Amino acid sequence: MKYQAILFDLDGTLLDTLTDLANCMNSVLLRHGFPTHLPEKYKHFVGDGVERLVWRAVPEEKRDPVTLEKCLAAMLEEYGRRWMENTGPYPGVPELLDALTERNLKMAIFSNKNDEFTQLTVREFLAKWRFETVVGARPSVPKKPDPTTPLAIARELGIAPAGFLYVGDTGTDMQTATAAGMHAVGALWGFREADELLRSGAQVLVKKPVDILQLL
Image (cartoon, rainbow, N blue to C red; front, side, top):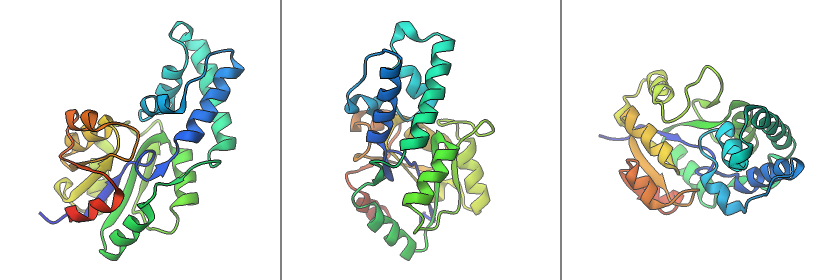
């Protein structure tokens, strides 16, 4: 069928947020006397919400509830000050969004990123384009790979799930797309590798953002 809408992940798909996330988490680790990690390592720490990011970054022997809670609070505070130091759209993303807008494709965003920061980053870096809805992680929103939110977005837009391209860069995104009955598109410019995306249900892989236009 002809695709009528596209649902995007945010971090690792539309925006390159890795350096800011890594720098902020490493600052928290240093503050607590813990070893830091190379930015590349954070490609496998992010994607499942800030709580999982903190859990993965903190040394295994220090993952008691009190320490994790303190590190989580510190990470939210640190990121709240430094979230836009290095963040920006990936090369080719503005051109893709322009082309999708010209084709009158409806666009939406669903992220496991804290909703406050999801809204902030979208307003700062993606305000030029219209997204029908932007949803981040909050207590009332089941996180990926739960398909509840993508299905709710489909109902809101009045488009069957099969009419959506779902573009993301992690296995969690591909699992979410599959569970929602959307066409799972794996973004190879993001945080994870092709093998993970394919294992998790990617129906197609794209090397650069404009390649998505070929699916239309």
